[in-house]
Image 1 (cartoon, helix red, strand yellow):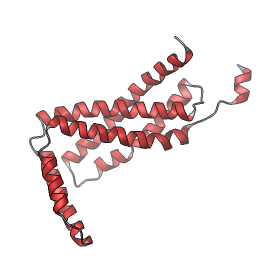
Image 2 (spheres, one colour):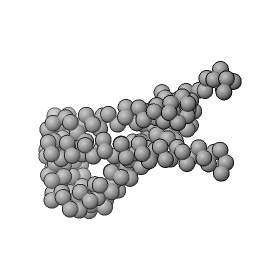
Image 3 (cartoon, rainbow, N blue to C red):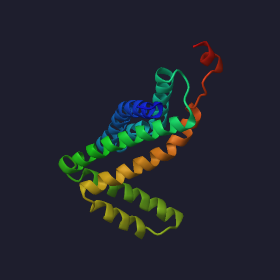
Image 4 (tube, helix red, strand yellow):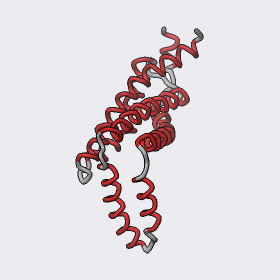
Length: 180
C-alpha cells in the first residue's frame, strides 16, 4: 500500500472513532430537545459541535501525526467525522421515529410554528408559508425525516470543516524533521 493510501486508511479510522463521539453529542442534543424543548441543554450540545470536532482534530494531529497536519488533510478528517457522525445519527433517528416518537416531534414542530407565527406577524410577513411547511413536515415518513437530517448534518459539516481545518492546520517543524 502506498503512503497516501495508508494515510487515508489512518485518517478514516480515527474519523470513524471521532464520528462516534460526535454521534453521542448529537444524541444528547436530540434527547435534550425531545425531553425538555424549553431548556437550552439540547441547543448547548449542538453548539459544542465545532469545538468537539476541533478538539478531536487536534488530538489526531498531535497524537497520530506528530503535531503537523495540512489544511487539506484536516478538512478531509473533519468531513469524515461529520459524515460518520451524521450516518450514525440518521440511523438512530430513523429508529426513534419508527418506534419511539409517537408524534412527539410533530407536536414539537407545531409548537415551534406557533412561536414563529407570532414573530412573522410582528415583522409583517405572511404566515401561510410556515403553516404549509409545518403541514408538509408533519406528513414525512421516518426514513424521510432521517434522510433530511442526514443531508442537513453533512452540509453543515462540509461548511464547518473549513474553519476548523484552517484553525487547526499546523506545518511540520523543520528542525524536528532533520533531528529524526
